[in-house]
Each structure stands twice: as C-alpha cells, then as structure tokens.
Image (spheres, rainbow, N blue to C red):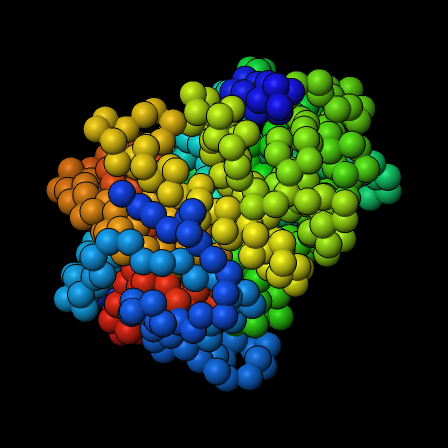
Length: 539
C-alpha cells in the first residue's frame, strides 16, 4: 500500500498544469449520493420512481455512410447501470429554464463560430495536410483591421487536454443538427490530433515506433479559411525557448509537414482527454462523408499504433531527443505505474483496449478506490485531472471494444469518483484540488459515457450553468466573440474566453447529455432535449 501511495502522490511532480458560414450554429437566432448504493441490475428505467432520460428526437434511420441521418442517435448503452436518486427531482419547467440558458450561451457567444476561429494549425487554403487544434501560448492582436495569432517563444504544452472537449462538443452538435460547420470542425480537430503523431516521423521510411509530439510548428502562414483572414506567426517557435519539461527538436524532413520544429517529451497529462475524445467521436462516423470517416479512422489507427508502442516499452512514453534519437525520459510524466487495480491502471487499460480490444491481464476494477483517494487527497489539481480523465477514457475505450463487464465496473467507479469530488466542490470554500469547474467537467463526461446522474448532481450542474450564463454573456466579453467584426476595435484579445461556472469548452460538452449514444436511459435528464433540438436548424 505504501508503494501505491508513493507512486500516486509523486504524480504531483509531473502535472502541467463572428460571422460564420451558412452552416454556422454560433450565429443562428437567438450532497450527492448513490455511489455506495450504485448497482448494475435488471431494473427498468424509471422503476425507482424517477423520470427517465427522454430519447428526444432520436433517429432510427439505417446507417448509409452518407451523413443523411438527422437528430440524436438512439440510446445504445450496452450495459444496465442504475443509481438510486438523491435529491428533489427537477420539474419540466426547471429543465426548460436550464436549456434556455444553454441555448443563450451557444447563441450569444457565437460558440461554434468562436471554436472555428480559434482552432487552427495548418489552414486549408495552404497546400498540405490541413488541421487545427485549440492552443495555449497564443496572443491575438488586431491592427488596422488585420488579425494576427502570435505563438509565444515557450510554446504550447497541453493542447491535448484543450482540444478534445471542443472536438466532443462539435461531434455532439453534429449529431443533433448535422451542419457543415460542425462536420468540418470534427474533421479539423481529428486531423489536428493526428498531426501530433505524423509530426514525429523523420522520413517516409522511418522505422521508429509511433511517438507523439506535444505540438509542432511549421513555417508561419496566412489563413483565409471561412472568409476570415489572419496571419499565424510561428516564428518565435522555430525554435523557441527550451523550458522543462520539453525541448524544441528540429525535424527538417518530415514527410507530411516538411521542415518543422516539435516540442518533445510527450507527457501522460493529456492522454486521458485524447482517448476519451477518440471514444466519444466514434458516434459521429456514420454522419460524416467518406473523407470525414477516413480522418477519424486515421486518428484511431495512429493512436492504436502509439498504444501498442507504449505497451511494448513497458508503459513508458518514448520521444525524440535533439539528436533525433529515440529515448524514454526518466521523469514521471513519461511513465505509467501499475499496482494491480490501483496505481495508474486506467491509463494502460485504455491503451490496451484500443491496441488489442481487450484488457489482457489488466484488472482495474472500478478504476477508483481507497488507495487513490488517500494518495491524492492533498495532491494538486493537475494530478487529480490525470487520474480522472484516464478513468473516463478507459470507460469509453471499454465500451468501444465491447468489453462490457469492464465498462460497467468503470462506470460504477466514475459514479463513486463523482460523489467524492462533488462533496469537496460543494464546500465553502472548496479545496484547490476539487474546484467546481472540474467537477462540472467530470459530471458531464461521466453522464455522456453512461453514468446516470442523481437529481442533486443535475442541480449542481444547473447552478454552475446559471453562473456561466451570467459570466460568458457579460458585456465586457462581447468583442472576444467577434474579433473580425468591423465594430470590434484594434487591440489585443485573449485567445481563451475565460469565465465562471465552468470552462468555455464545456458549453459544447453539455450537448452530449442529449446526443451521446451512451447516455443512460435511466438517467435523470439534465436538459429538455426536445427544446434544445428545436433551437437550431437541422441540415
């Protein structure tokens, strides 16, 4: 037990912490409990007296591979998982009011237009492998009406934790409304996450195991995508300043991108987010055209190869050093540590599920337990995020692999994890490592993969939604959402729209409670899904 606690505690050292096209959604109109009593049973939805999740607008059309289905897919969660309700059930009026607030957020922030603007990398108007991700380390400036994205000299480190929730939100929106904008966003970000694998190749005959970069920097270029012109200034990162935990490495003959600089030492921090997004986005495959399906297949294939390489390396994450040699850093960030069903079991489990389609000898139980709770009680938030997101990812990968026994256990563990974290988040003040924003994320992702929330948990989400509704719609935020508008003055603008309640990225994740095929039929609804579906035009 002491070894387990030491390993988990040591993780603290590695945590890093406008106008659109006609298909735009952004501008269209205007004490938790149950985990200790959670059960897998044959109880029918609603049998405990609660109101079950409505499958509003679910489409039962056959998959024609041509993106012709409309509306959210039918619920297809392959396990039966119910929880006794805790708290006062929400009335239809309360659900409608919360849904109105989410609709306001999507419309008033021009949400998917903003995602479309911010997600960038290699624009489609420049010949080559186009892609986009959500970045850190970027400043936006507007001068004489011209917009520039300037990448700072220390670069980005955790685009892999920032991009997936936007990717998932775009997928959920595409399942609901099927607009060209969201289809392109899904493709663009899938290719963005693939770019981190493609950038590690030294030549067309590279025989190295599949590796991942933190980020890569091509030559600076001008984007004219979607009628918005802006200059992407990568000059400060070719190369940038080496700052732990990563270095800049020159890859002069990359077969996909040519002469690029990468940041090495891919850490495990982001991997739970990425694998969770990969799992959730499989629901969008049948709604995309052949090119979109190929993009998602490539994303899946590259990360399968990476999973197999990490497993073969003893669950160590290899990288390239400055001499272009393959090496495995000794730092904690490059290793997963296994101690049976404890330690970091869910990380290797998610990779094993993707790489082989089964858990092999890994038995992670519920993916959460006393050892982790004790070891991370005082750990910084980034450590808890690593554990939480790998757990979410393992549940997604188990469902994708058809490993339903393991998936059910992991869902039960997610419910218990949510209960523990929600207790902390509802304290006054909450501890630094159990902030309400993070618990919103946990609750939403848990619900989207099949955990039925209790009424208390839904009420917590509604409270945070109310805060976000006021924060992100404040008059001082307006110019952030319409930088290209002629009425927006020259100046410097934040790349990231910061607000209260929950992260900007989770606005789209809320849609999953109505669109994810893994939403639980026994769940207390979070939103009025019929109202949400009717709020935007279906394509």
